[in-house]
Length: 257
Image 1 (cartoon, rainbow, N blue to C red):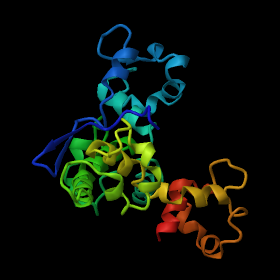
Image 2 (image 1 turned 90 degrees about the vertical axis):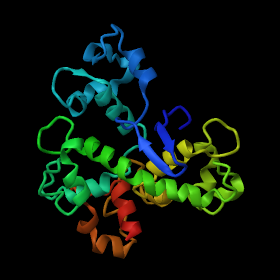
Image 3 (image 1 turned 60 degrees about the vertical axis):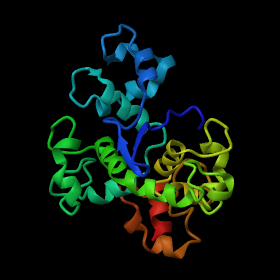
Image 4 (image 1 turned 45 degrees about the vertical axis):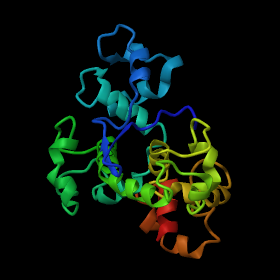
């Protein structure tokens, strides 16, 4: 957790957040991987030692299909694989035809997203993939997180102490996970990272999920959930991708409802 790159925030006026154009600040990783310094990361620059995952899922992140990743595409990949999966359940709920993309009709009920469609449709393919949707959600929920932070910061010193954070039952037990510089306080960037990683509610129900996931394969089957009549009785409501098993986001969605 401590080696994850934090989302870069600029703070204006105390409580307002302005997010970078990309989901995070991954400049150092990008420059290290861009061995020929041409401003792009090519597939042959992504070695097994660097990150095998990027080559296996290259087309998911090479949004303009030019066989190379620019900084924005690279940042989307890094953020997505660094715990930014908290919006999966919302994405799948909106994805009515389950094709792994959102079209303008599917986002029709989200007026803010529909209005800003071209801003988040990064490759202009008239649809949003999960990473594009994630970027929208981060940018539009940041203000709410800033309000939460300021509410917790009772002494208005722009940091959260262990005493102040005690009111957040989910964050308090994981203090050391998010106090990245070990200064015994949480700044706004650290708090935002916490909110990103638990945005889908996954963090709140990890222990319950792990207990039910008897074979520890990262999914819950109907057999493993057989003692939970409410869950098995409404299985199809939460098995969003209809694969006959629940991942952590789907389970969290069940628990929150």
